[in-house]
Length: 149
Image 1 (cartoon, helix red, strand yellow):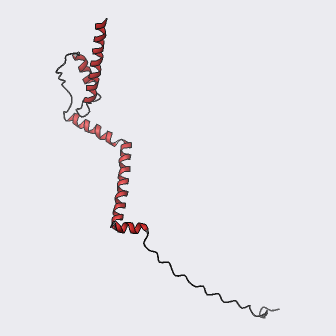
Image 2 (image 1 turned 90 degrees about the vertical axis):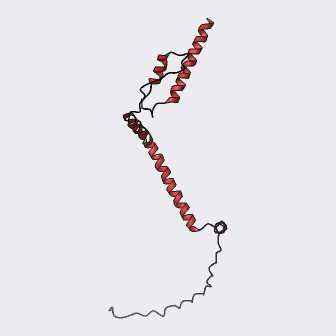
Image 3 (image 1 turned 180 degrees about the horizontal axis):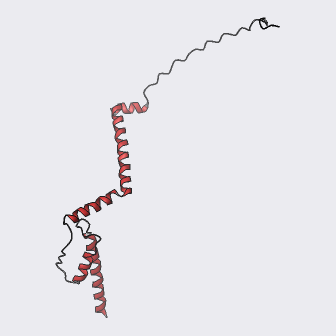
């Protein structure tokens, strides 16, 4: 047998024609409830875009502030400001005591000078005042107990 000869095996079976399928018309969708609500409130897509941009930028700024606080930027700025104020001469040098009736002057000087930093921006006046009040109460109690004996 040679390759040039063809063998006929009969006619190919005829295919059935496809049934014609009726194409559905695309359903015309009306505006959604959200679209209706936005239209009633007179909010345009431009407003939504601007609000989204502000929201994203605000979130990024908030994360940046939290990260800066975590790193310690405010503390470093406070220390730098205290250093500059100290170098400029804003330091506690003199302590003037007025109206002292029930306490020792040395106790007041000791409490006032027991500060972390003597720069005026770092002196904790409320803390010094509270410490003096606590010390005064102790002295008054000690005096009252000594009178009872």
